[in-house]
Amino acid sequence: MIINYTVPPNLPLPARTALHVVQTALKVHRSVAEKLLHDGAVSSRGRTLSQTHTKLDIGDEVEIDYAPQPTKLPKAKANLSARFEVVYDDEQIIVVNKPAGLLTVPTRKREPNTLQSQIRKWLERNQPGAKATCVHRLDRGVSGLLVFAKSYEVADKLREQFAARKPERKYTAIVRGVVSSDRGTFRSYLATDESLNRYSVSDPAAGELAITHYRVKERWHDASLLQMQLETGRRNQIRVHLADAGHPIIGDPRYQAELAEHPCWPLKRIALHAETLGLTHPETGEALQFSAPWPQEFRDFRRRVKKKV
Image (cartoon, rainbow, N blue to C red; front, side, top):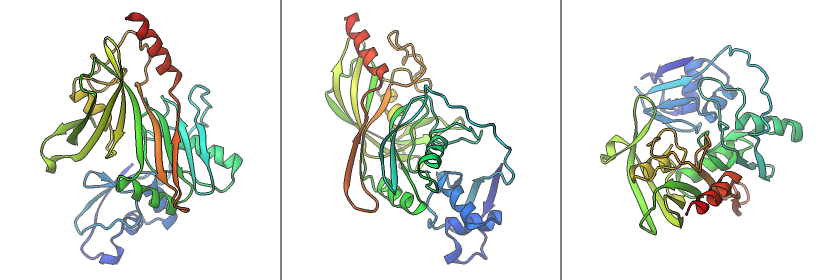
């Protein structure tokens, strides 16, 4: 259920944090409001509010996806073909390799089997009392590295790193066509239509700045292997930029879907993999870097497409 709330004039400035506004709007305990914020269920002015201390203005419209008496969901069945791999784990964070086909977090449909729910169940079995709070996301059809925080405080620290563009995020993408330039940068402002599709605009006031760097690793007769590096982390950023360039990611069902089809990719997933993640440990300050090898689908495609030459 979507709750709409307007920040009233009688709410004093110290109480206009996202946390207090959610508590006021829903009349819920602090812990409930914190969970809604950290699960991405609160938004205002077209952006998700995930940090409890974010300040709001009088008159701001806040949208909260809240079910006070949620329907009991069936127990999630383990999907052996869509299980995560633990890459790193300590008292503050857990880094995992997400398989393609698995949602990072539930949508408004309240899907019971997501990466977040799987991690939480894994922690319940192995580290009772530990939490798993989402910090950033990958699209359902994309595989690769994600970091989850084990407390709201650590989640805030990690989100501040992402907001400051500090983490290193490199992706491997297989795209249609032969990319001519060895390297380059895509820069545009991303807006969202009514169907939640993203598209590039030139007006800074109409969208969010998105910057993607690329480097060609291999070229084949009708496809290219690219390494992508995010400078910003907007939703669908890599997918939109490559489609705009006429080289959509193979298997992408949303952006230039017909051109994205390839006879050597008979799969429903997207040929995009978050291969490298580098960040600063939120507690120790240590520089951490993780890598996840290519999925087998990428290796199979490379072998098939080389045989066609």
